[in-house]
Image 1 (cartoon, one colour):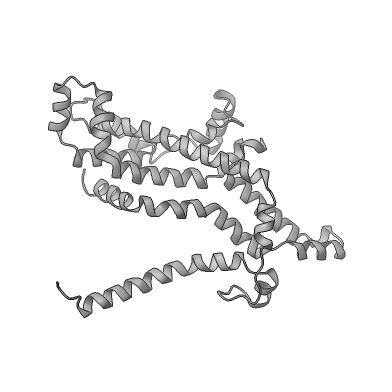
Image 2 (image 1 turned 135 degrees about the vertical axis):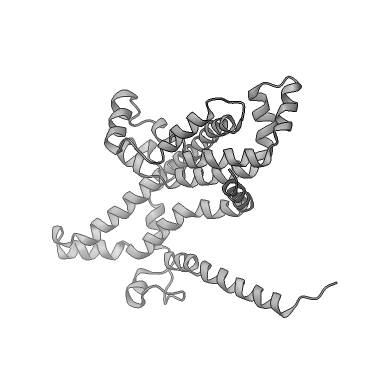
Amino acid sequence: MRKTGIGQWLLTILMGAIALFCLLPMILIVVVSFSSEESIIKNGYSFFPSAWSLDAWKYVLGYGKQMVVSYGVTIFVTVAGTLLDLTVEGMFAYTLSRSTFRMRRVFSTLILITMLFSGGQLASYMVNTTIYHLKDTYWILILNGVSAMHVIIMRTYIQGTVSEALIESAKMDGASEFRTLFQVVVPCMTPALASVGFMKAIGYWNSWQKAYLYIDDPNKTPLSLLLMRVEKNIQFLLENEDVMSAEMYAAVAGSIPGESARMAILLAALGPILIAYPFFQKYFVKGITIGSVKG
């Protein structure tokens, strides 16, 4: 059994220190969210607050039913949108990877154009509301469009890992293009699908702009938009002393945990993503690496 040299120990200590420094901000956010507002105002952010409190979490979770509804909407939109995008982009990537497809250069050029030019926010809003009538519907949150970068990543992955011989053998056995894709190609591109799917899921989970523009129904409000409104309410109440009497403002300011509530809001939004990331990390690194060095 080979002994571990001093260099390995030093490298382990160094990487552990770097990992700890990267973890410290997240630990600070957790600690501050459970700190009393008085200790934050008096001592600032600290890993060792003078007093602990659950006021921030009580305030954020005080939205109760709306918080549960918004979590449900976000989970549904994230899962449905990610699966839909992976299906469409995966089929598109497989088509572009086939050397026998005569129009692949044309479609590759067209999809690259979308990376350089866009119709703009106003044009998108008018088309989505007056032509497609997607305002205040789940579809406007789910339909996110095809990402050229993700298509290129998956296309390059297919070209680098799935051999033409494997595809041709499936064709000789009588498999159609759809069967070849879903039964032969898709099982071979799990890292690419996982990495792209994780990026898609993060985008859907954190997206609030579409909901801000198109969603008015509280039952269709995603979590990110709800938390943003909670933050705006806190900011409004704490910054508008002139519209309230001194007694009312003192009561309001004393009952709202401003700084600690902001950290609780941040954890409520990022918590599920932080929990899910370790399960996708190995696929994420492998899929991005292979999809970026070839093609």
